[in-house]
Image 1 (cartoon, rainbow over the protein chains, first blue to last red):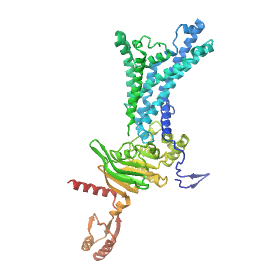
Image 2 (cartoon, rainbow over the protein chains, first blue to last red):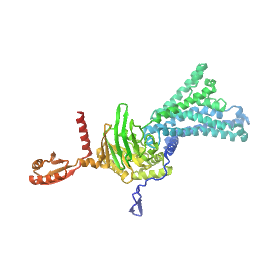
Image 3 (cartoon, one colour):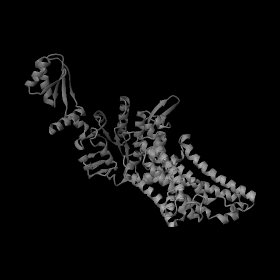
Image 4 (cartoon, each protein chain N blue to C red):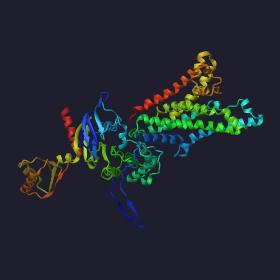
Length: 308
Length: 309
């Protein structure tokens, strides 16, 4: 409703009060709402538009993940220079298949410290109530937040692998030969990246949904990783047979790496000694799906019927 | 369904286990400013959640803008809601937050930015729009809460205790903004409050809920006119005036130095004139007194207590 134009003379100029203008443009409904929550989630996870302090954690992990890839490139380059062409491959230096195993704990830490920011703050400051009274359901909200963190995780795990691939390609004395021999690594590390990102996102978001305090969620997640990793690794070496195999399946960072191994058709350094490697492929994939789908379903159930 | 009503509640019932929050309530809300009045725990918040489609009623139905908000989430794109409690992200600026909320309500990004700036200007926060909201005063936070409810230009806005926590000046300004929301912006308002003075001064109509049941519904004027009273102040001979009025069959009571006549009509004025002449009392002041809604509420409470006794 326009109230007409009121004119007020001011020395050296004129101020026009154009009154209230109602909005008669396009309304893009629920899909625009989902996209807005998704975009806001990505910005929140990366600290974009926030203080320097909010940027430190996510960007520290992103830089570290890329530095690890850079070190792998430098080592491979040094091996080629010192040992001659093909030396890196002969020395079986860590490559794409090993990268997610090497960085799995770092990726988990990243999820543990950053994912809670997307859910906990909205609940603690009760901003969630303003989302739920808009053309969004609880499912829309949590799906958009989940997708936002998944997108950040994918970028965080794919980027170093792409850098590693380009580094090894450019470092190779015969880049075209390298490309024809290793091009399959690209879809493999992309798929393995999806596997790792889905696993870490689901777990971290589920834990974050149980508390409005980001620190509690992060401490719990870091604690679970810190406790289970040495416990399962240590105890499984003391035991033998099926007990050791199943116990080593609780080595959380290794769960997506077992699937990574199946995608690459090779064994990575993290899972090389793991008794769980003796279990069949279907058991390892089923175990991974259980740990990925169950948290996502519980998360969805928690938000589906949420009301302020 | 009532023609032209923005909100229709039909035999609306909401139970939480054995607790009945709303019990078989029927009312309609037309365009304008309507007050939803009730004490704490009367069922106002439950009613708001039902209107926004956040709860499904145990029985009965609610239609907002002709649609069922629980089944049709899209209708919320034309509704606004200002909650009573804090709900603002402390790290975001008002401009950024309002733009985001406009987008979440379905507006394209460019329109969302324009609407955010316009709405902040109308709610008096334009100068402060780039500051993080964590540093805002209570009054400023209330304004942002109102602004986020209006940023997508809703047809109908629900305000839950908009003056909560405000000092008298802030309260006046907020109520002025609420009136402006309808009279200048053309957005209808349902204002939930337990403060009768706020409702009386701001709303065109009221709905009074008590213990989950509808107590009264109608125009504010009708409530206050219905209980019109005349008070008389004289310089002397007050007892003689009182006696003269009583002889004429006019029920008169004392309120301090005043004489009060309940439910006065035109004939009472003639009796008052005659009584004053007869008692030779110099009249200082005579005026109708409109009853405050507070008294209406007190009367309902007294009636309830009598029934229970």
